[in-house]
Length: 266
Image: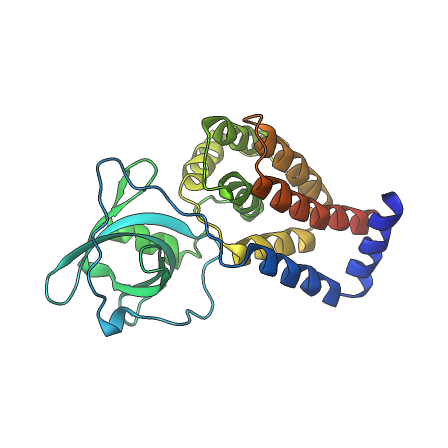
């Protein structure tokens, strides 16, 4: 096992294309699988035919930390639709929010001033339009520490890859956040903010691949990779029930992290 890890490590170190091969394999494995946010208590989905200007095919460069929101949206005729979206980008020139719509399973544009409600699907917490836009314009990292944000993207995906989020798994992620804060001089505010943001995170395959790439290039790569590998185990084992999805994805992520660790030790 050790020899195989060292071989992978050398390939990662001397042949960057190997990283891309791993990314392609992971993308093929995960496919279009997405973390789907819940509905706020008492809410219903009401989606009308989208107007042509709402459709989108490519957002270009987008934020790295996608967050789920439940919105009530008025179209140009004043008709209201309710749907779950993952905010990705704000375009000041047009005043539109670019997002993935879970009801349409496609990219969509929403005029920000026509959104009558922005709410967290998990907690029901309501946000103002200004708050949502501020997060998107700030680079989309409301956690406040890019290292912790990337760790959470992977952990949340592992927790929700089987489309279930048990309280014990949420507790494991909160323990990981607390442990991170102790190791990297974080404070109570960082812990509280990170736990809150994690409840709204909706990472897809590109977010997870991007997070592991980012970790591999970080000055703290060795420490972060070791911690994340351990915390993945904690999340998977939290409810004492390992699904096939958790086993497969956790294994893939840990293989990549093992290569990162081995490279750093060379």
